[in-house]
Length: 442
Image 1 (cartoon, rainbow, N blue to C red):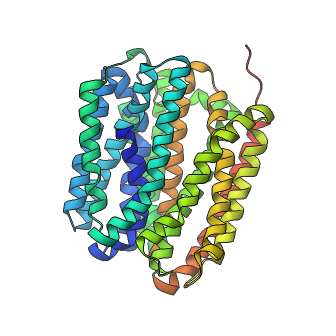
Image 2 (image 1 turned 135 degrees about the vertical axis):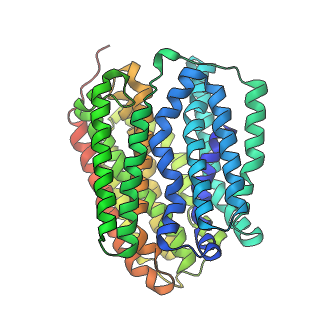
Image 3 (image 1 turned 90 degrees about the vertical axis):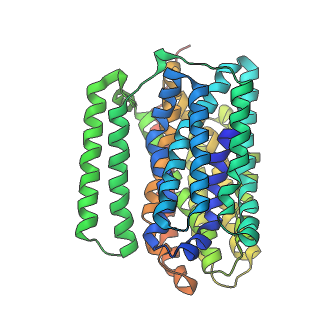
């Protein structure tokens, strides 16, 4: 839990620190986007490989390696004021997170069985939710009182605790038969997503489609085609066996994940950034603005998980994205010098309600759409795809990040409309996909 909480803390605390980081490092709009995406890219592309390395060589070993790398990278981020070095540190943090996250959950699964396993995973998930909830508040206070490097220093004692407990209290485990060491696929996915993200970031931040952006996008597309061909050749040994996508339900639900988490991740970056940069909020006020999200999702997800078991997931997975989209449209009212309670709180609460409705049914439906022996792979791929959605969304937000003050609200509202449409399309994809779902044979 200590190790995996690093990723949850880092993901939420950075959003309230971005304006301060931009001012201190004189970063461009593209570089601000890369402060987020230099972390998201390796995490999205390598999380499946991180799990496979743990399966093959030892989950505790790779948990410790990933956690230690995350700690060293956090120190690099804290000690530099150079944008290039900061991006390098963020990329190393992303690699560390890709190694530690899948192995933290795999160690829990291996240490418990039956009802005890369910309770352990529930505590693990709750710890992540609590960390994500309090991180923006702590991060906002730290940025106000100790400066933005302090948000990276706070990772160091957590890293030390996680490594110490892992080495002294956790038994090693592995399962070589499950390992899919697809290094070529991981490399192609990383390079392909990286090139595409670079092209989209350049296009968005410059607000013009340049030759460089076009070349980067073409290279990214070619590398992703090569990735698909390599996965097809490897068959069952691939990082992502392509025969999974013959399952219409699985494909549609993963499209829902990509669209919904892409739109939602983009809004979660923009709301605190715009409130601080254009709305006159302090970093801690920007962090408080997101508090309803963690509370409602944390309280509502278990309830909706039980309800979906009775009524089925199709309705929640259609209504939930629609409510999220409505919250994004309501957020268009956010402007300069406006009350939090009348303009920000209703929109954030509506988005939180929609996510609380859909999070548990979406996860359960993805796992329920495949055979039992494929659930680990399906879960890992779905997690990677949710982060890829956020990666692409952030790459397209350069047009908003390029502005400040009153000027930021125009592109912010355009982005909200686009992301609301994308979120609603995610609900449509789930409705269509779940129409094809058949009960499993017992």
